Structures are given as structure tokens and as C-alpha cells.
Length: 323
Image (cartoon, rainbow, N blue to C red):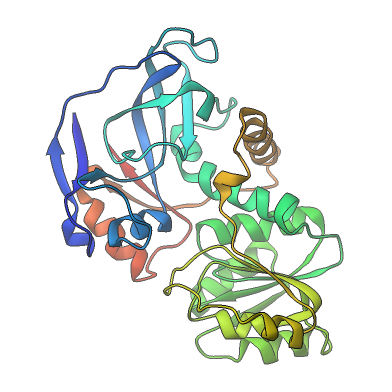
């Protein structure tokens, strides 16, 4: 089968298309023939070495496709089923992958492989953020950075399902229009405007009780200055580079703030948590309350170009590789 591999960390140029042996499922595993592969910012962290992996390595942890074979003891899937997964596998940038059956989910009717691969990791990230990590409430203002990105678009929509007042940040006027179309009441151009000052103006000087920041270094100070007393600052990404270390005294002075740096994988650690998270996402998608935009698709061989576009912030919504 064809697969993307890298032998050293670095820029997108380290990604290579190679021929490798197609794997076979062992006990408790399934073999999936990929129809679509999700491209996520976490993939760039593995590629650059920000999140170290053993080299040489495959890349990617999200995909969907048809179950080709099942290993001994598998009852959760049978050949011919559509299956999707997000996490637990390093090497989704390939035509096939072997996955533990209990780490994959079965998308419902109406959610095809492309939608599943575009939505699962980003959507479950949004789910744990708004429902379990720092739950938001109806009528509550909430700050969402990178609102036109893959996770950001779902976060905005989920916040509106709950009934929150969304203050979104984006990097361009085009993306501002997208955020408004998704339901954001307020949009800040974070490269041109003072985020903290705008948030305080919008909230009458109070700030937001919850902020979701996937940008990292470039937005850290603006987010910190946007918090309400006893607010929760959720830092869950590093799109502009890692956020700086947090001095606990700054949290005290900012209003007895809470700071957390979560990862989705700690919130879908059991099969029950995984099924609940995916079920909540797919339920809202099936009801038409969350729509997932596939902004761009690339052939598997063009993984390098996909990473270049992602890191240049040229993408909107979800990005896919098509094997």
C-alpha cells in the first residue's frame, strides 16, 4: 500500500510517499481501507518534533473507510461496515490501517467517510471542551479563537446549540464572515485589534468566564487579559507556536483564574467515553445542528502541500487527504 512516512523531523518537505506492506489485523483489531484521512494541526506537531515520536514514523491519527477484515474476538464490527477513528494510531496517512476495534466508531446513516474523517477528531475535541472540560451555559459569553478553522467552526456551532454568546476571533475579513454565518455575535480580527480590549468592551468590562484558545503563542496575552474573575482559560493548541509558561501569580492577579492544557485523548480514554463523545457529535450532525465544512481536499501524495496550507493558515474548515 501507499503511505506517508518521515525519517526526520522538520518542515513539510520531510514527508515522503512510500510503498509499504499492507498490515493484517490481530486479535481485537480491524483492518480499514481508508476512503478519507483527516489532516489536523496535531499532525504538524508530530512532524516538527514538538510532540516527539519514534522515527522513522507514519503520520496522522484520523481516518474513515470500509472494514476489510476483522481479527479474532471482534464483535463491534464486521467486514463491509463503515468505521472511523481519531487517535490511537500513528499512520493514518495511508491507504490502509489496523486499528483496535474498541477505538473505532461506526458513523450513522447520513455521515459518510468524508464527513466522518473531517468531523471526528475536531468534533470530539469540541465536545469535551464545551461539555466536560470547561462547560458553558446558555446566555454566557465565551471566547473562541480561530473560529473559522476546523475545530473552531464546530465550537462556535456547539456553543450556539447550548445558547452561549459567542465572541469569535479570526485572521481575515473572509473568515469573519464565516464566523458570523455560524452564529458568532461578535467577531474580532486578532491580528489587527486588541483582543482583550475588545472582549472587555463587548462584555461591559467583565471579561469572559471561559476562553478556548487553539492558537497558542500569538493569542496568549490577549486571552489572559480577556478573562472574567474566576474564569477558565483553556489552551488546547499551538497553531502559532507553544504558549509561554504560566506564572501562577498572574492567574491570581487576573482574578483567581484557572488555566488548563487538556488533550482529547484523556477525555475518550474508555470505550464508553469514546462512544458517548462520538454519539453526541453525530447526533447533532444528523439533526442538522452542526454542519462540518470540508474546505479542501488533497490527494494522499500531496500531504506536503496540505501541511504547507495548514501552517500558512490558508485553510478553512476541515482538510482531507484522499487515498
